[in-house]
Image 1 (cartoon, one colour):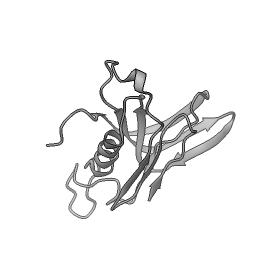
Image 2 (cartoon, helix red, strand yellow; image 1 turned 60 degrees about the vertical axis):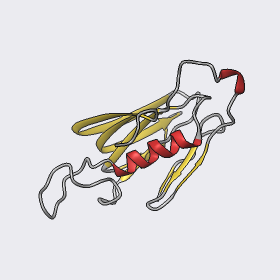
Image 3 (cartoon, one colour; image 1 turned 90 degrees about the vertical axis):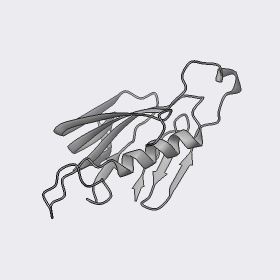
Length: 144
C-alpha cells in the first residue's frame, strides 16, 4: 500500500493496488471560474528520495517514484483518481525476468511512491534520479 498524509490544507491520498481512496480539501465555489482546469503531477523515477522539514526527514523511499502534485480548489475526486491510477500503472521499470525495458510499474516491482509534504512549510526535497526519467501528467488529458 502507498499511503500519504498531508496537512488539512492539502489533499490526503491513499493508493492501494486494487483501490484508490481520496480525501480532497473542500472546494471553494467562487474559484470555479479560474483558468486552471486540471490537477498536474511531475513524476520522476528515482533510486531514492526524501522530504525534510525543520531539519527532520518526514518521508523517504528507496527505488520508486517521486511525485510532485499541483492541487487547486477546482480539482475533484476524479482528478485525484486519474493521477493516482496513472502513477501506479506507469510502466517505467525494466522487467528483471525478461530484460525488457519500460515493462513494469511501481506496484509490480514493489517499489515506493513518495508523495508527501507539509503545506506552507519550507521543504527540502532530495532525490537521486534513476535514468533520469521524468513524466508530466495532467488530469484533463483523456486516457488512451
